[in-house]
Image (cartoon, each protein chain N blue to C red):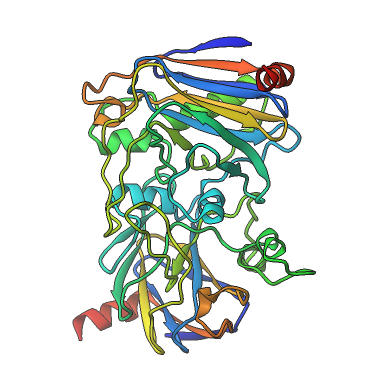
Length: 209
Length: 209
């Protein structure tokens, strides 16, 4: 098992072999982690929130769910979740344009740029449009009239989500740098998270233990 | 004003100048029309359901709404809607994989292929991943627990939606060929729709009349 510190406002890209897993630990409890995955064999294809929603018939995902790619192939499975299970599939990664809209002057860190940086760091091509991420721990409750608001996470320090790789994938994670609305908690302070990466053999040992 | 018949199961791509508009008429009442738009000046960028949802704080769009692109620029506005106003932003375009999943043997017509064909027909590049469309007249009610179902449209024969172009765009429309679930009505029979394209000068005349 390999441990990676995901520093506040930054991103990383991690290769995970089929049968392995990646755990996202919300060290401080209220940090949103934007999460993507692409196929190692065909990195222009990857996790799709639209297809995942349509297949499950739900705007939320939860423990036990398989997550699908844009060709409706199973890519990841949420095999464990110690948090209250509130994650978002509806909202795009934050971007330079989003922070300009909020009145920020200059270049704010953002998850779209983080996504591109992480892909580049492992030699993968950067798409023109950033795919919609799985926003782990992000709390966007949808009302019955279809309206929603950006609320503070309900996750707690140490809560974690375990993603099992159903194919050889690259998983990209960005500790969301949003500090102008309470997406990362009422204090609006982006925090570190921790990533643990399990090899397929470790997963088998865990299952048998 | 130019009138285009959008035959059942087919697609078209239409250039609309800034200030012009495109009207989608649901001739038979229950036909879903998958709708995209890309910038003429930069066709890799276009309409984004994720960004549009996030900006409005709603999973639905309605008359009066501006629709945004993936850089959060205003691209279209829904300036009129004679239907009950039920449209979808959550569901991906149907694809070959979707019909295989439903048990269809062979190559079923699908909105993703239609999108690519329509782009090619006007000499535009085809993206690897089909962006999430605005699914006009598609009825996917979201329950308070986040679950949703694919329901028959509530629109009526002759209902129409008017989309004003806020930039020089290409609008791509696909009359959804779904005939295995009641997305296009309980009869599951894809139908024609009609498209009307208004030049900017006609729009000005309409406003002043």
